[in-house]
Image (cartoon, rainbow, N blue to C red; front, side, top):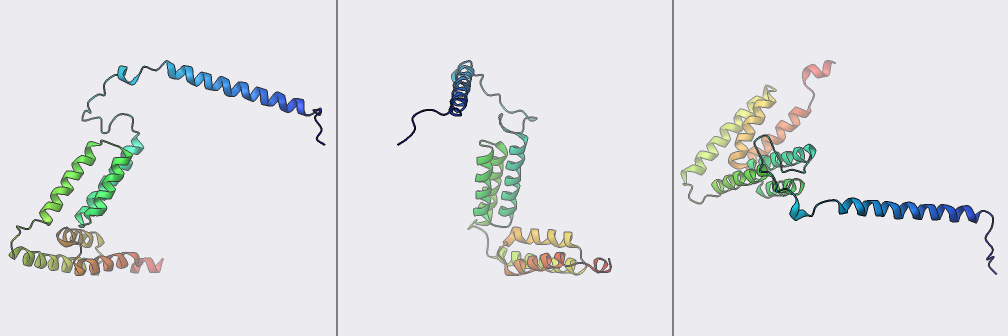
Length: 192
């Protein structure tokens, strides 16, 4: 049979529960009263049009704007390399971070133009030959730069080749060679 008589320690427990209930109810009332003082959304001031100094819509932190800009830069890099699906995913990420960001819309237009010019069916038959010749010259320049350990020049040449055709096997192979060469320690690094 259960003991219905409260013990001497139960009084303190009941007092703490009562005090906690008062605090919770008081906090709820405080929050309710503070929300009642705010004007309804229809009475709020209209949003201010962005000025050149105002980079993002109001209400977004500098960190959010920086994250959105990083996503936009990533989208541009992917589009330059021909990965338009990845570029759109990056832009959607920027939209989630800072909705309505003008820089995202501008990047989306630039990438759409780039995609249109790459997929333009009106390109002449001579142009693919010219592209292949140009890619071969850029790949050779990149390999020469890798041999002299000028990785920045090699990267620039490969970036330009990737703008023409990021899926070209020679470009992909040379990009991997550059990454491997840059990861190896140089002659001066081995002596230290």
